[in-house]
Amino acid sequence: MKIEVQIVPHRMQRYPTCGDYFLDDNNDIQIRISECPDWRVEAAVLVHELVELILVRRQDIALSDIDAWDKNYVGDDEPGNNPCAPYHKPHVFADLVERMIVRELGMEWQYHEDMLAKIEDGNGN
Image (cartoon, rainbow, N blue to C red; front, side, top):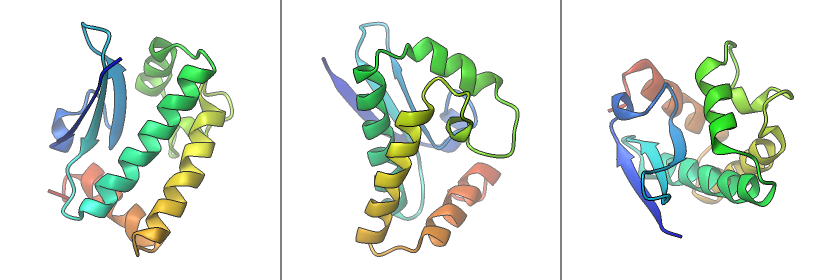
């Protein structure tokens, strides 16, 4: 198994998200993190995506089910926070790890969230 990580401009994400993972044509795992002026935010999102992916694979949750859920989700919150999301438990666990990493990198959670909101609004890079 090969895992490739890329930091990309937010507009290059497959759908409006700051972190994404998927299988490419070679069945290798691709992780895409939206570019941010603060590398620590990118790192925290990467840790979240990697932890979530590991747990999703452990629980045999199909990536196609996650993609379908995320791409069709309508709501104000993160798609994975919804208890009906096929990857809800892995997402919640990954969120806890992300919060710990944010703290260890010397950021406040609100700063991290504000930086992600700027990226999503098109003002972060």
